[in-house]
Length: 520
Image 1 (cartoon, rainbow, N blue to C red):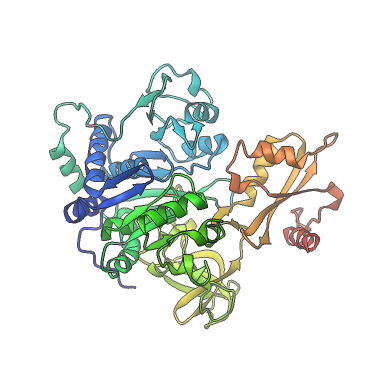
Image 2: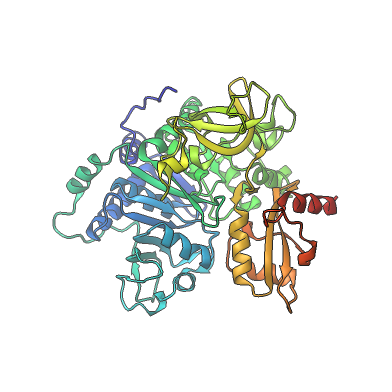
């Protein structure tokens, strides 16, 4: 597969420098409260990058980001990328159990966040996440529960001894020698092959899997969207409904850096607020999951607005992936974290998982991918654990090919995909069994749902002498893990009601079939 040629060296610092030179005064990130130009993004990220250098960070340092959509995330992401650090975005849906786990398994050295995110007190949130943090007496951290963590930088007011206050827009007072010349020298040593970002997504195991991308892959895989943007003539304005901390956000930000596009976003998706910004800025496109676009179209104020002519928003189906497909209702494959959200940046083939034979058009098989847009690997996994000897990633997706494009049918694995987010059943099962003493067993499956795609459903077996209150358990679970992982359908079965395989494992297919039958 031919690797695209870019008009700059494919590293994030080079892309940012070019963007600031070509579109410096043009708006880059626009929220209802603030407009940030490309030049302002370069300036603020330069100050933060120099502050990072003064703190001892550099190439390979694991830097976690816990921000919602907006300028703060982008400034910190650019700053860390400029010095060659390895960025690890945290989903703002994470709750204490997840925050603590990703801090540990990601070997995060420095976490950058705000004192308040989406109305949540992050000081209390992190003390709930990290045993021993509340007892720390200074900003340099040495905590066995998160042995690699050395500091937590926090914007906004903070009264915790363990927090390092930081203003992401202010020019810092720096030690002698840390200046623009040093930063430029370091940026010159950032190469396309350097690891750039780890995007955590639910895996087939209990732990999230970390999808690792290089600097070059981030930019090459997003260059196709950038080319589409550039072909539109005037620099477009994209409303981004993808969170920046997931791969859809990386796709949009990478394309904007290369094309000068404006990214419109709000800190928390809400259909009315999204429509307000789309209307005020006359967005040229809305990028997001079909369920979010449909929510905008269903909003009571939709018909009374002066909205731009965006096909996915105003004409035809919200899900453009199902338009003119060879099999009605089966969408084109939308991409995955492993391909920076762009399925066309990789080779693909549908393969019979039993014989290894490549399937002809319209015959289902497992989707295999490889190429310039594919991830470097999974964090803490050896290459042989991830790719076959010919470099193919076996995705576990059930798909068929048609005229060179893959179409998504389902999954061979148990992964549940609800509203665009991957949910690992085993992760949720372990959480329920280990957190709630009244739960003896938890069996989590995905059930087809007309709006979410799939619904996270759980069959719970009560421990001896206990009863389970499904509503109370759901409310308590939402305080500990991301809302999209919490089962929205909970059934209580006795152990004798659970079908088991001869291997001693639960028969998930029969569990799903029974739940589907009960729902019909």
